Image (cartoon, rainbow, N blue to C red):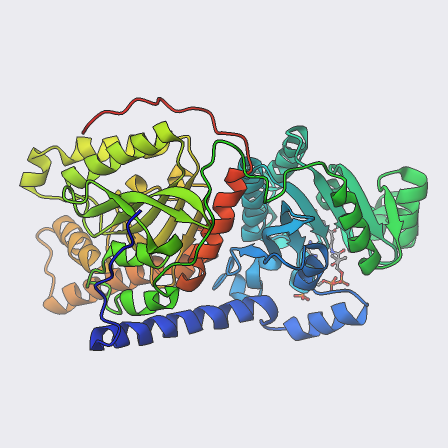
Length: 540
Ligand code: COA
């Protein structure tokens, strides 16, 4: 494949302006991540109490389980951001992918220093999302359980619906039946529904003195039966390991628990990250020829100024090598082949508005990748499909629909990164959340909404004024209405608003994109070949 020849002048004034703005965004992202990890009101008191009980912080627990030579890909660190009066950083739960003896696992670990590890609505959404990722990517799940169960004041938003608490147990039972190991280490009280996380696990380790499992805790037992009983006598590690058999092992410390868990994982007989399957084309990985840090200077500080998708690709892929498909037709979408961590991937990236030709080109390219069994990567930066008389007359609706249908029906693994705007139906055609890519990450400069705040002001204000026919409206009232709409759109299209609600799997610093994608692609590469798609290629 040819090496992309960059046209970026890294010494230019726009590059410097963009770089400064991007670095500020990256700085804000890292500060907010830090806050989610160990900040928040009242948190220090909880942390001190947690450590004072001899317990280990949640991310240190994960570090004690995973292999030292592979990084942990944490997901949705900023879930819950700006919600719940800012009292539930990270939604009180950590999820992510790490390897144990080279085998990748999904980790679902409660953070007991946040509301006792109880699950707020975004926490259950994160737990269920992690299980869905595990199911699709063939990952076993390690549950580090330290949770007060459902966050009771919001139980109506956690308990009854399909993807609520019940849905997480449903998934757990089915993951196990798929042959994906479900392993629990019990590090806190597992009460009521919480008891089913270990009870539904294939193997359970309990830590004496801190781990407890009961359907009803001592206060409930006292109220219901008049029995007065100590927590460990009701559901401690010794009782459950030596008497009830709910647990398989009791250990005296967390350190011992993680050592034993690793020992169990050593005998799991599962594929390692190095066990790439025959259907996948993997070459020797090489770093991009252009420094990924230059992405900072390419992403426009002003989101109305477009940036060239090929320049982004040059800083993500191996050797900055890229073989473009139909480079001279439908140029507002760039399609082509490249490698990330050595793994072949078909890339579809926006260069602004999607026209009929661009939609048809992308559809043709998806069919090629389907036929050749090449995973697809979507880099979203679009204001959507082209509107207007000419475009409608040229059939943009049906051409856009072809692309949307091809994306929806592709069976090869699909991945999406929001590198800029994700507006309107462009979000659908470019494999937005509704199209269930295996992973969806976003950059801190990204925006997601039906339309931009600027367009929304005009559209919504016109609609509202239309409905007020005959009523007197002053220019001041119109201006106020415009401001209201713009503010609302600005707030709701902010990437932190999106990531807080798990519309993505995490905001990532652009320079980390390549490694995040490299690992995600590798998870698919060690799985069996996905079910075949239609295999037919129509020239568009
Ligand atoms: N719902 C709402 N809040 C909960 C909660 C729950 N299920 N479990 C714990 N919390 C909150 C506490 O109110 C407290 O909040 P604060 O920091 O704002 O004061 C915080 O979590 C810490 O709880 P606390 O009891 O002080 O901590 P602890 O470490 O001594 O005990 C638990 C932790 C989880 C063992 C204990 O809180 C507990 O038993 N919770 C209830 C469990 C339960 O019955 N769940 C039923 C689920 S269906």
